[in-house]
Length: 276
Image 1: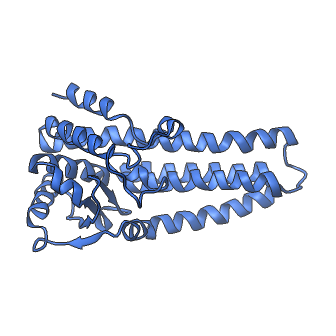
Image 2: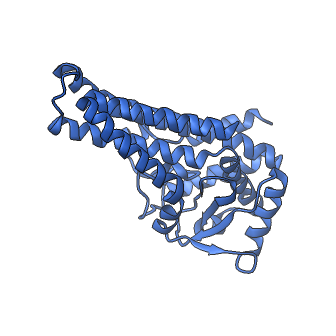
Image 3: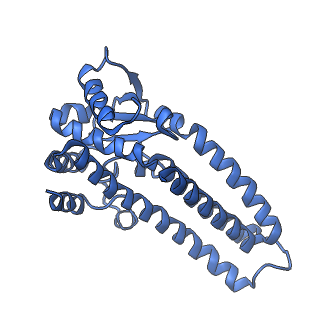
């Protein structure tokens, strides 16, 4: 069922992209958008995980190199009936973590050195459970595709402002201009909504997996507090949605916070409190 939801959302976002291409440049725009969407989805499906791991200089580890972390993940995967994901450690001071991969067999969990230094074993277990919940519900692929299509729509809007086609079936100029401004906002809101809902679901999944919502509550509070004081130099907006805590938390960008892909930590902690 989760796979079906994932592919349905991918299809819906792709059709939205193609439709927008048609609104800007008629049939020619639809063809270009279709080819572009197919290429982006193919790349996102097969290669986005390795790209993001490389971007953050994530190093693979096994039982011999990170015994405690490996045993936590092994125990939780058995509990969640999941295959063992690949494990990575990121040489980064900001405490954070993310999961990536297109399916159960190609999943990976990455944690920063800052997270391992800051959290207790129980809190680390809760964070890992959160990431495994993302894996279980195919959230990594959904988030990647949503971010890719949202970015592509924004680029298509900029392209259309200067190179809009001349097909007869194009809408009038005012409608076209309105779409160029509205569609990127719509795509961003879709990405934001999908990501925020998935964060809540992963928090709930982690609480059920560990049986201790308070572990994730205290872990989130620590991560949020430290993220406000420690920047992540390699972080970028295209991958921020993947992390358990927004890596830009410490940046005072009001509009960025308005369209953040993460709900506030206070809201997440309150929801976890209701699960006790």
